[in-house]
Length: 413
Image (tube, rainbow, N blue to C red; front, top):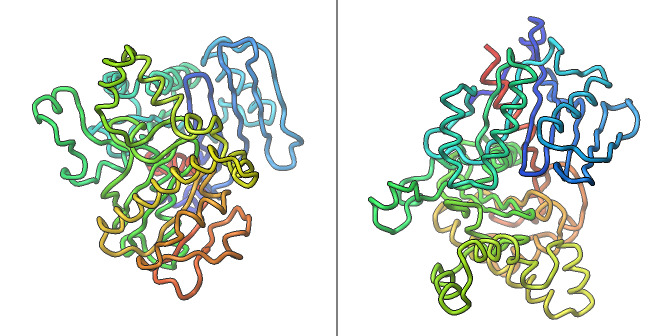
């Protein structure tokens, strides 16, 4: 996909703003961006939708004052988006503006059909609905956000940008599970991967950091937040990723187990008498770091480790061990690695995680410079010493900008 020529758009007086919506099950995140200069005009978060303690925090344009906050019940996504629209209008950035070119929506699961950003039509919405069984926590909320935005601006292009799209370039031997083919095909069971907009953005920015074209670079991206995933990107194309049919597979996460023997589920059903729903909650919400030590905040875990807490130390070691396994595995898949890149909340901010994940991998050409690693910065940067054969980098992710870029590229014609 090409990056839009924003200078030409500006000269022609075309609409250049994109509103990005990320609708979760009980929240809506939004950002308004101007693609003339890729600047962020305003942003906000509506959380705890449907509760008495709903909260909206809106950040106005630079120079527009301090963030504004609303509290009190916001009944549903329709009300949440209307409240966000009111806040934007108060800044002179209302959804009725002729400068608004499109609304870009994060959609978690696009299956195999959606490999690119797509203008939403009735048929597209039906297909996203058909995918609800493989993304029951995410796609319904994404659909609600799209329909609400359509009602507010029925004349405006609504563009779906899919988390799974970047990973559709995986070869079949990487995407297939080794189960009966007819059963897998009948129920759409395969590895899809997630966090695709982040992996796309970060792998491209990593190539820029190295002064190379994405097509010339092989990168391992480690997206480490409360949800965590790894990808192997060869020449700008994903060839392997850690999440699978759902976001449960792969790395140890804040509340998710990551990789686990599938027979554990049978064992819990037979021996503990747990239902499928109870096991689902256990593996998705009561496992990972929180299951191991009671905390899913890496800052708190590191504080406890430094104070000698053995449970926290074990949780940290398990987390790092899984990272090392994936780095080694993806180095084997790629054959040649130009960079290992850390991103997202933990990846960008936890120097101890980065140091521990790379320690002992010198034979793979990896090393971390302690002083560079200790620097806190919001810009892409190398943290490896000059002598390292493989670069180690920190690249802050910007999924909203990636969604806006893909959305604008689609509608700017």
